[in-house]
Image 1 (tube, rainbow over the protein chains, first blue to last red):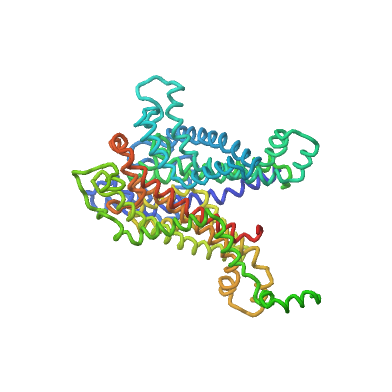
Image 2: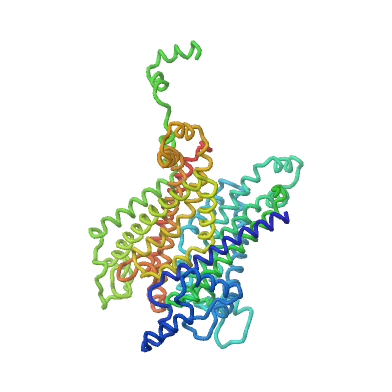
Length: 316
Length: 303
């Protein structure tokens, strides 16, 4: 087990190196010189050359990459081009808690709704209720999240006035849990919809498989109540594949938060990323792309390790 | 074969035919199963209608999608404008028809491109194995680790946004799933007897890979291609919504929704965002139904 975890961690190292290379490489494709914002266009060619030399911008690209990587490993992601004087890591760290809050609450809502529905459908397959839930999950997968968000803001916030139109909290008001939740609930539900839908289908299939197993028949034959058979014997095994599913959902969640944060004006890293792209703030873009991939890698690592812990049938 | 059966056969010429003819092909069984599935047939019909709307847009559209009517902006649905007008007084129904062209063009081209790359890379990894496999699959691991939208948006920020860029960017970053799928198929097929036979006959490697093995792996590839069309339509809509995809004045379902973020529309024209979103939902749903139907139809495990 321990060796498996260590091996699994070591396997992420080449992936992390690859991620840094892609993040670095993409921005190299950008047109125009990175110096355009710093160097006064009036200065002479020699001064300019000296400037480029001094900042290492004449180095070959692999050398630039190694230097950049050295800084990254020391925790320095560079300086924002637009917000002068701010480091990229400062800007990201300031926004990250908002995104994590949104993602975690959203995931909790998605799981809390999807898994009971999936389990229920699996215990009563091919009934009217099962078909209704299946239809909803089909719709959920095919609906653009941001459209649901737009409709939610248009109707629930603007037309009916039940929810705030965006942001994390009411401006100029003291902190209150209720106010925060009031702002959080719509974006969190909307962000989770498509994953909620696929999670429902996934847990239904997984439970159907499990409920068909011999040990479930044994449990039933022993005369256990339906509830105990389903929730004690079935659920424990049925949820193991769902752990892997969670790992696979993570990129969706992080990616989905970009658009949802835009719709609800939620000041997280997604909104920061959109602002950064429109302002061509390349260091910030690179930093955010790397952080987003890092979140996915760490999430998948955790999912794999949890899987190994929760499924004792697999030996490593 | 016992005597009884022979006599039966002699009496009934149709049954003789049944035995001498080839058995029912897998394709025929699959097609029959597909048409028995009501949802996938419904999806297929919907796709035909949407494609028809896109192809015949100039003839169906009651208005020029670019024609502005600043005296009649954000009009509610009426007899003249079925689905109302947008913030510049352009007919929403006509713009939806032309938007279908963009969405389908982007998704079909992007899917063909990404499946081609995915098949070539997956086939090479699966067939050659060893070092080739490790290198290609580590590369896939890296690309898959990025939430796709971050890569797409970065590329669109670096390059000039537009139709061509959008398609290229989708192709560049969306082939990984197919590559994994095809690799898996090739891994399980490459040691089968027919491949061995082809190799013994001295056929060229590329011929063995693409003429002998690939046709056996086509089922899952077609299913995933169908499902990817829906996925690309959703991503295109999202990117255009953010202003990074199809640029106005060209209408696309996504950039029509971009305008719906305006507070004025939310207050005074709540119906406006409904229609483009419904078009996306219906189209994506149709491709998903067809994809699921194809999967069930060509899955040899259940009959």
